[in-house]
Image (cartoon, rainbow over all chains, first blue to last red; front, side, top):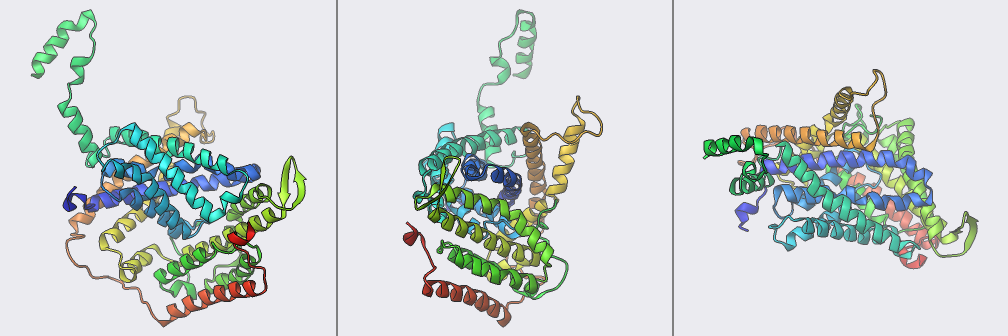
Length: 224
Length: 269
């Protein structure tokens, strides 16, 4: 990939910032909603955060899916963390920037392995798993999870949550967003258009009932 | 929204308001990183006792604002205390419903809970005394952040400012189209309708972002060197702030080490 193509344009930067802001806001709202429940669950409230952890990292694979350039997954997580710290007063504080960096790097590693060329479900799944592992490694440093009784539970829950809520969900959200048309001017939108232009037209594949055979033939000849 | 003011500083002047935003951000980052080391409750407790009046007075925040902000962080802090109390090996203090509460657990949990409150306090003091536009200008001037990145974050900030209102609008618009809805009923709060609203907000915000990007490009952003309209000063008083805060943290750490109460992950086991 040449340097000129790899450079992120202003429009893409703003898109990343908007993604980061919306997800930063949703993360923050999630934390507010989570507080009371966490308190009610007592010691298990802390474990329950692992079920949700994937949702906190979903912006990274989504950004890579949409923009398809190196570094965007890390950038979007960093900006999301910055928004939470500088504008929303997160209780985690500026350490959140480190969290964003590590989680973004974990999620992006899978795409870097394919040199930003493949966007199948498997790559997204790997991305989520790697993000979960990176996030667990950071938790070991920040909260000393290794010295606790439930480390295996924490690790397992983080990886599963990363797989589902970060990796696979990113692909689902990305495809849903692309269908609305807002991403038409992005790498994802262009890739989708390229696919439908070269593939067979959908009308000709669809099975037709005996009644409208004639109509279908008419449409086909009219189109060609 | 009863949360923090979304990047809007409290509308008065104070010592903290006047300090350089980059310096404030860097200092709170340094303190948060240093606080990762001690895991005894005493060190963060002493720092919290020092920081509470200092931040309240220097920022003229008002005791009620500060206490309300801390109350928001309390569930998170208590949850950390609870989980550590019952999951760490050590001398058993009590049995609660089949779980063993250990002294080590209480110590570490208390430390992490107090650390959360302290860092949360610093975050609140930063947000309530720092204007978003000034912060980005200062990051451009003093942290050498490129103009494209700065303006992209500011564009994102514009979107953020309107998010609570947009969320409310979308939620009401979707609720009013619900066929089974009775007039005056509360907005639905099931996960499906929340997710639907979140997705719509994401789509509308992305569309707004695209318009913002076009507007920025039309103004020639990123085409050449730029001047700064209202530069943010950086002077000796900012250095004083950094020295005072970091010095206080250093003295407390030193004192807790000399008096033998300081614990780290390596000594706590």
